Image (cartoon, rainbow, N blue to C red):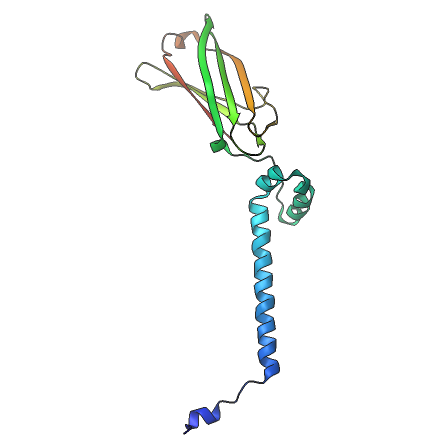
Length: 172
């Protein structure tokens, strides 16, 4: 037994169903390609670090989006080892440290923030050393180290107040 509602609903022609399925497939493919482009752009520095031969292709991809492929920056994979801040003579101190790249690919050399503290562990002075100022290599190779030795001249009135320090790597 059929109702009047069933009789009034015409069946869609097969070609219309095939056209609709083709449109949905094409839309899914376009959306997937857009997602792939977004991931390539978002992860371009990492991809170029892991596979340098792809860098020219990524640079071409970036042109219409006004982005650029740069060195990979992952400060969480840079470990500061064996740091020291010692008085050499008068107001001259020497900062030394070794930065270790724990990533599986080269990363850009970071800048460093040196914070000098007093007896209550309160910051007395902070100074940022840009990577160029520390004569850093452009890249620290995968698993590689960057030894740092840098002289620091303090104001005479800070000599007696400085009791400690901290050293933090970061990317400006």
